Length: 548
Ligand SMILES: [Zn+2]
Image (tube, rainbow, N blue to C red; front, side):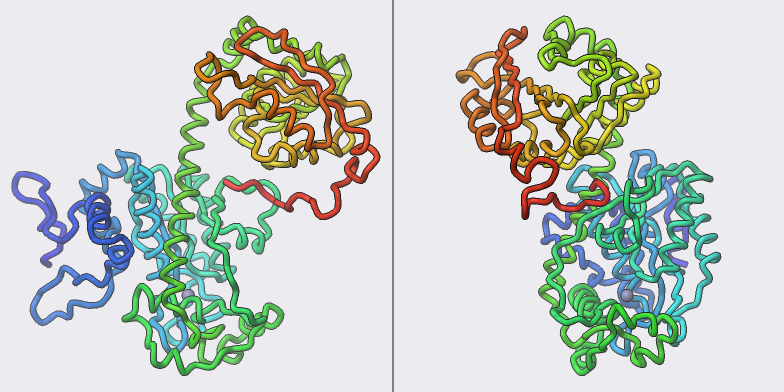
């Protein structure tokens, strides 16, 4: 037992384990920089550490760089340092006559490795949990080599693993699922929900946007889902599915685990002709529907393509995780601020509450606010319109809306409604607003012309838009930097291209060169199809849930 736990420790307490990569999460990264990351990411091709005579050195390891190859003090330290855990949920199932039955476990593990590297590059510490491969095979279990695990077994096992991670001191777990079986996914999700309840762990199921849509995750994403993007898929150009051990998966394996695919055999395999419509037959009897076990066109595998897009998955997943952690830290920071005190200071210095008079806000009015932030103006508007009126406060940052909601709850205000906006679409209810305010938000908008156009359908006849912005001045003048300001001419140019016109400009507010622009809808925009409906061909993209 050369690698038994006792060998790790000398008489004077812990010392470095004797196996390779004593601190894999750190040295692994340095090595990557030195040796070319992709090569190192596929570093399973390096020789395994065992050299015992008479024992086969084995093939690829799915433990390399995971917690399994760490000594307990290293695991303890990683948890203390706030490392997040990446955990794949995979299976052992047949992958056609040309590939190993362990492909999903290898690929899930490989994605964890790629993601970990990308996270480290973003300053996020991560460890990889032992790759989980006792998932559910509701279709392929009829083939030799596939293990038939019951969903309840999988859930119980996952529950114990989550509880173990919790007791080690980890707080965040990100699940990278590597198996498309519906029952398997459901079991994973149920185990996550249960573990969240039991342990308070922060577990997130990472899912590509497309998958989320297929799974029916519409509306607000549940708190256990973290959506990530995927590189654009060019598709196979045929109506046939390529979802199991076909061109896609075979290409990835050939690119990163070439020893696990019989490439000459793969090149001789005929394509299957299963479509989304008759995939049910496969679920009923996989061996009858696909006697060879794969769905797709393995012969068409493309190594170079896989080498290009798989690393992109890692980047996108890491981006989603890092973004999630950033937002969580931001939320914590915000929760420590006294917003009411800040608002009072703002009132004194900048008198921005006077925008209500500029906009003619009266009790009972229904008004909107674009880019409401933490709600400075929102609460002024709310107290002026009173409970018989209404304030729709939007922002593209969900955390800001959370603050508004919690402040409103504390103040006992029920007539403020928050709206998560898209970048170019304020998403206010149609034909409802008597005035709209934008305070120090206009310069943040990516495409202000598009936003203004999408605002028109929400406005009642005669509604004004009141925009408070800092005007850009000559270089060197005091005030917000150039990227946060427009000159008056730039602002007027933007408005001239929109469905609005400038009615008047108020420069009487205190502070460094503020300008308050009062806009009204252009006559032609009122008459045209712009009011109440989007102009032909300009409908905003349908998005069923906000992206992280
Ligand atoms: Zn697979």
